[in-house]
Amino acid sequence: MCAFPWFILQNFITTHVVKKHLKNIIHILEKKLEYNEEVHQLFIDFKKPYDSVRREVLYKILIEFGIPSQLERLIKMSLTEIYSRVRVGKNVSDKFAIRNGLKQGDALSPMLFNFALEYAIRRVHVNQNGLKLNGTHQLLAYANDVNILGGSIHTLKKNAEALVAATRETGLEVSADKTKYMVMSRDQNAEGIHIVSIDNSTFERMEEFKY
Image 1 (spheres, rainbow, N blue to C red):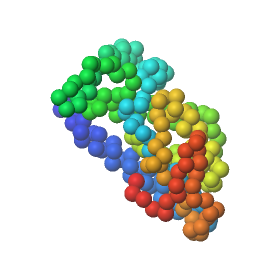
Image 2: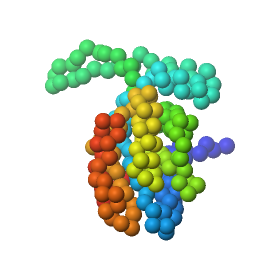
Image 3: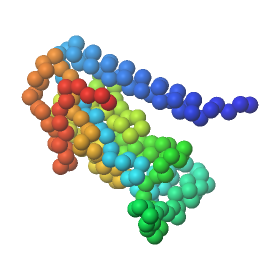
Image 4: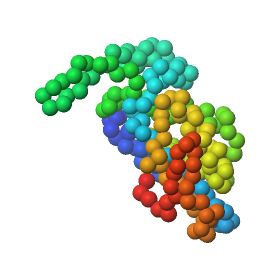
């Protein structure tokens, strides 16, 4: 039996999820604009997400998600006793231990990161109400990108604050420079809000940007 090539499977999953999320966003916007209602969106980007994941928290997440103990131990072994050195010119530093983060370029790292992000997202669903808009979830996530939607700035901030608090537990930190805020409305001056402040970070409002 021929195994399905991983790079093809990964590309299929990427394309499928992106298309699904785009359809969800378009559905929300069409319905809300039809009734002349606003849609607030916060496109969240995390700072160096793979380098920030707390390994001890990740191991607990794997157990909570029902990953077999033998597999969890193997994952832990692959992330234990990792060392690095720094070279400046011809000088090389002594080796030092890397205790947090995932391996760059490791085929397992994207899946482990998804576990950490899924853990945070589940915490938001448990702790917050009103996470649906026209029957569609208000939080769409793929890889290290998250789009939070709300029918008002108040709802958006409430859901974003919950997600930020949950991701902080796993070590993730929101990038204020790359996170953008948008309002979709027939009235381009909707609410007159130009920035959103969440957890001591300020996000500018954009009319358009490449996500």
